[in-house]
Structures are given as structure tokens and as C-alpha cells.
Amino acid sequence: MAAITLAVGHLLITFVRPMWLKLIVAAAFAAPAATTGFDATHGIVKHLMPSEAWQVTFSVIHAVPVGMTAFGRVAGMGGGRQSGVRPRSCTGLIFIIAVRRI
Image (tube, rainbow, N blue to C red; front, side, top):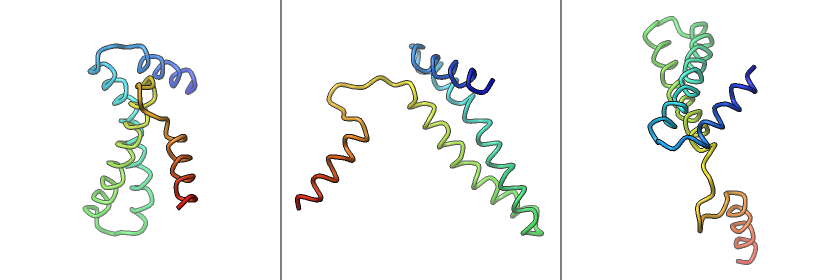
């Protein structure tokens, strides 16, 4: 079921034209990831810290980058290749070659 959901999300990101709709699809994938990041951190931190305020603080601090990472990965999932832009792996390979020549 998860593979089907990911495939549908990938197709929506790839073929849907309006940017606002792509952002909604990306947010639909990022929100559960952020919630999971919060819950996972809160489950660990509640055993380590007695203060409820610090538990929530650390959980939110962890949930924000988890949600942002999920959003970035899903939002960049369907983009076609732009002209003049190299793929990341090619850019990394060129960097390695350039460093070895120096």
C-alpha cells in the first residue's frame, strides 16, 4: 500500500501543472513525516527529561527538520531536468576530478 501511495504522489508531482497543487501534495507527504519525527523524539526524550516543556521543545526542534527534509525530497522528486543543469552525481564527479588535478 505504501508503494502505491508513493507512486501516486510521484505521478502527481510529475504531471500536475499548478505549483500550488504540487505544494499540497508535497505537504501531504511531509506532514506525517514531521509528526513521526515529533513522536519518535518525544518517546525518547520523555525518559531523559522530567520537564514537560523541555520534552516538547526538543520534540518540535527535531520535527521541523524532519518535515523540511521530507518536503524537500518529495517536492524535488518529480522535476524534469532543466537545460544547462547537470545532475548532482555528475557535478560531484567533476568536483572529484578537479580536486585530483590540483
